[in-house]
Image (cartoon, rainbow, N blue to C red; front, side, top):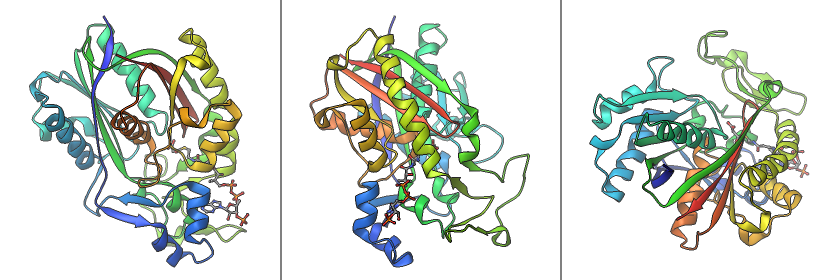
Length: 335
Ligand SMILES: CC(C)(COP(=O)(O)OP(=O)(O)OC[C@H]1O[C@@H](n2cnc3c(N)ncnc32)[C@H](O)[C@@H]1OP(=O)(O)O)[C@@H](O)C(=O)NCCC(=O)NCCSC(=O)CC(=O)O
């Protein structure tokens, strides 16, 4: 038996945040400076009353209608999110009910960021190959905008909200999910973190807790903190090794890969990785201009766009890396 991807869809919220608006707030960063550094021109931002379940449901409904999928066949829901609607219950349960998927399905959330799509494919493959499930609805959804401090220009330029839906089936689909490689280093936990709002430090962020650092950057323990330099250093070390491990785990050479689709962190990071790993530009997919870094949704969004562009074939190497630290990669064999 093989686990295969049968369908992918995604959803981006309607409200846009363009570089012009960010430049109005932070005149020291011109429109060109932002796009030149990040490769991002626009992000989509969830409405005040729009949450991860709402976005994941929209992505799933699009998947069902675009591919004419019968929701009664879904027997497992996986949701990757770090911005769940509630601490409990699991958001996947709310989604099962709202989508009208049969109660005979399993459903769970898992908390990962930019490596999350790869982990989800791994979990889905395990469920299929063990015979536990046949048709898995794998969702990713993040509303990072609700974590970002309005005065934090660095995170504002990079992250956007979004959701994706992928259907993984037993022996039915356009891409076989081949071999994986995973890694974790919790030493980096402090470098990408929202400290407040869990159980250790409960409560909402409060303006009086704002902290201004020596460079004038403002943050707050209830908002997203990113040490960009440290994350850059981690990624630069971990991802080349990850790619090597994924290639050897699949008994492939770099020349056997027809397209590399990495987590779309930002252009500066992606260009650095592409050059360091020595990947030809035409084999390296970029898709972040209009949506930014949507965390666990960047890979499925880019994969969908690469499929739409019409020339995806052979072996595709996916790689995700980020918060945790956590990383993972795998090969898709296009059918
Ligand atoms: C954030 C960065 C792009 C910042 O780049 P640098 O480290 O070079 O920045 P720096 O502070 O040294 O500044 C160098 C010059 O770049 C400018 N600069 C920095 N950030 C900028 C931005 N966002 N837009 C425009 N200009 C920017 C500075 O003003 C400065 O300009 P001048 O030279 O004119 O003074 C980079 O550190 C990076 O790529 N870090 C990794 C971030 C990342 O990948 N995060 C997501 C992974 S995890 C994830 O996605 C989420 C998850 O897992 O949940």
